[in-house]
Image (tube, rainbow over all chains, first blue to last red; front, side):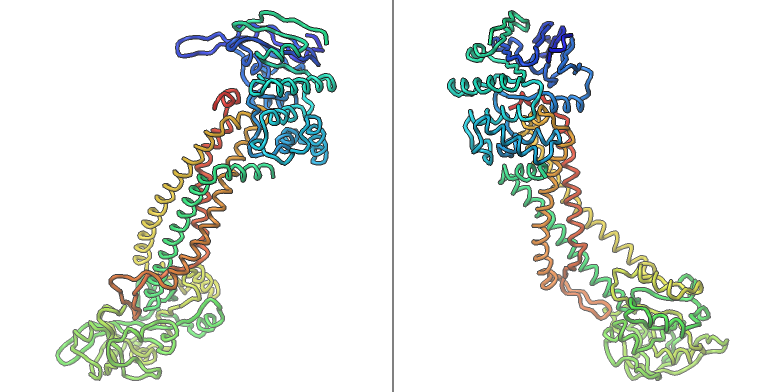
Length: 232
Length: 405
């Protein structure tokens, strides 16, 4: 396997049992994403985008095949090892933001650093810096319910990036935002990708994300239909 | 710290639900505490009434006397025992007694009687014998032929204060004990602890009658706290350090009374546990609802790399915090209620009199146990019912939880 690849899937499938019917959500998928890529997985609803993202992140287990992330086979990990692995290597951005409502902006971002055992002084410094980068330095004491959707997604981006993970997985990150806010956030993520060299993998059916990404993988009926790269 | 902050804020998210659950727990605490206070207070009154009417909190006998009472099996080294008792802080008062059966005559009537020789001055400090008198006067502090008899003996021999009668018995030196006595007083028929044909006389007069030296068959002890009777009896036994002496608390000397009381108390405990069980089910329902509502959040926490133990700890912290706050509120309410019940009490529809004490109302006993037991019960019940939802949340599969709304 290529050392540069931060994500690799080999023959990954996912089959659900729905009553007496077997649903093949994902047919064997072979995929490799190199470090620093800004990749979008596109496709209509039910094409298998979220399923693939869940398998890559270790949130779900494949029916068959292997997933390697940051050089490690995640299928062999226990639940606790997977928790630790996600904590240390993956940042998540969700469609519904999924901030912890009882934590302030600052605490939501700080949370992942706490999980990683980063010392208090360094935590405060890193949170301050990332909140400045996502344009939320004045909102650190607010609770998620006191923010707009765009601001909440900025917090989610800050939370995903603050620990400097190998890969950021974003599931339909602009789906709940208006187009202007979505475009601004994409520009911000692109800037962070270029500035920090972090790997981004989106699942989307938003045309704007597809246009801004440097690689577009189209899924159709659980299979890769096309895989195209663009110049930066 | 983050765990407690999150737990506290989670509790404040649905304030009405938290308040209702807290009130339920605090209400359970208060009810439990009040019933415990009343139960302890009432049993305290009954125990005091019972023990101070005659038996004392503990008794010293010559070894084996309680199983086989005998005129000859007495406490011989009385001076040493008395000195030891005077040196013990836990012993508030003590009273020596001698016992012997005898035959009582008055006119043409003869009846078997039980002599009890007492030290009137010491009995006055330790017991409430004098207040059980129905008519006449009590035994004088100085030895005399004046005796106090039970209502049954008075009735059997048709005696009243001022009348004379004779008694005959077996003296310790082998001779026939024989003397005349004057009835000084008669004990109450309904409110006295002396139900049999008793004849109470001065201990020195009884010793003289029975040809006993300076010895006693029983020493009744009154401790500073009846609740510590078993432990204090142990202290006395250790201080006496004499294998020829038995020191037994009222729980042993009055075994039947003690066991009946314990059985009754257990019944009360079961009622309280049922109430706490109902409270626990209510708490379980609330926590389960909260966990169900936050399934997605737990999924997010897990997706971010949170270990199941943290989520388990988060829910258990919420339960513990709520239980602690409820206990504090319950303790304050209980303090006020128990204080009121310890002063005003609950009147008894049909007052009871026994051993010279009239029992007219149930009074609460405000002791640390009245607060500690409900606190321990509420906390442990809450933590126990919190285990299931906490484990359920800790085991949530992130991908399923993230899909829930």
